[in-house]
Image (tube, rainbow, N blue to C red; front, side, top):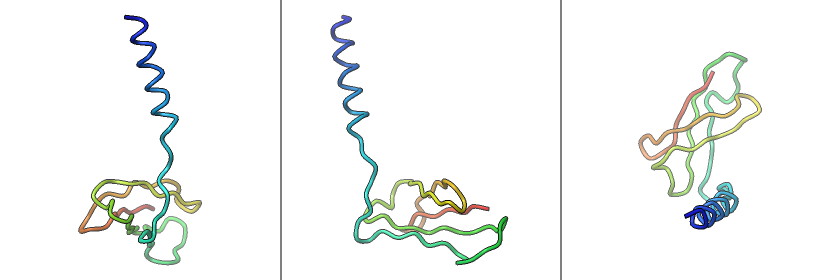
Length: 81
């Protein structure tokens, strides 16, 4: 039993280590509106990630940190202050 658990642990470690972050494809964009805003202003984010717009994703920015975008009408959308 412990041998089986050890093998399972090694397989799980390999799977977790082998996962790499997604890379941008040809049809990937992130759009923030308004284009310029003062600190504390709410901005909307709209993005497209090739053909993966049917599941949530994260975007990162020095301006507003990490934001989770959710599917909406064929795009990924979110907002942040």
